[in-house]
Image 1 (cartoon, helix red, strand yellow):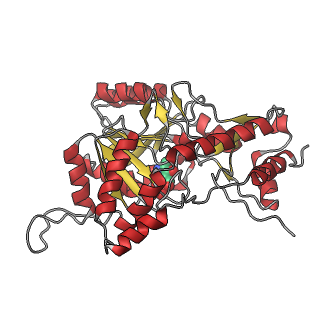
Image 2 (image 1 turned 90 degrees about the vertical axis):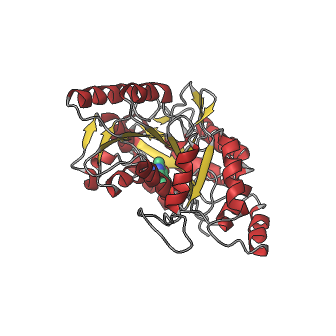
Image 3 (image 1 turned 90 degrees about the horizontal axis):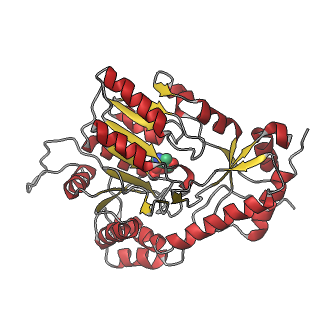
Length: 377
Ligand SMILES: Cc1ncc(COP(=O)(O)O)c(C=O)c1O
């Protein structure tokens, strides 16, 4: 008999979700508005420590709205982390603006503030400053926010934090997503908590979040009939899914602990392997370890990242390379990128291991022994 498949991550329900969903059905709030939606936004604000929030249909929708609310338009430049999922940069192109990518810092895997500084200096010299910075917090770890924020303040450029992967992570005690003009989060099925699909945009500016709600519900002007003076979007979260979100939010702390334990398990399992390194944890914050990410040194380990990934596949275990940097993506080939060597190296050697909080101990042991049994030269 073959072993059952181990996936990278799967949704992990707390058991409370069904009661919240039943409540939505009982009261017939099966709509993109209702008491769960209001409560989810309020409880989310309390959890991350921000002023205002609007629950949306996805993290991508939240990113898109953040650019719309900043008035990004065709021809503008928007800075974005190079090592990320494509959604972070796609939204820039939705508005016909141009992404400019910044490489990662080797210590954090997130945007290198020194490279950002160089880029902004060169933009200022050309008299064409970017209209926003999208700072991604990768794999559950906060980027180094303060130096980025200082640069943004110095050049008067709004900061958008893409915290899709980092709900629950902290930076000097603050939650990621709460330091910029906007923060965005994702509740996609692979995230630390999920609503099957969904997202949140947060800000301390109440008016901007009111506008986000307006744009995400088709931009209806106040009138008894349907009156529109701006283009709107159908981006609001449903009250049913907000019910799932409320139940998931209650177990966020537990999920963070479980994720960190998975990471620690792998660290211990590979401690005698000099060819395997782990994503470093920056001293300024606490990572959620959303995914356990490793780097394989092929000379030391005797096998490449791809050898390991394929060997895991043969053992019915899903693992994925780290994000392919945006500057290497065919769709962004014409875009400027500052640096790029670090993200290229991380992509070449990096692997995300199964990190589902519902994995059994035996399954984690299977993952670790499959990594170690990869045929080596
Ligand atoms: C860094 C990053 N940004 C944005 C998104 C988009 O979120 P969603 O899938 O909810 O649209 C994701 C992942 O899904 C992501 O990993």
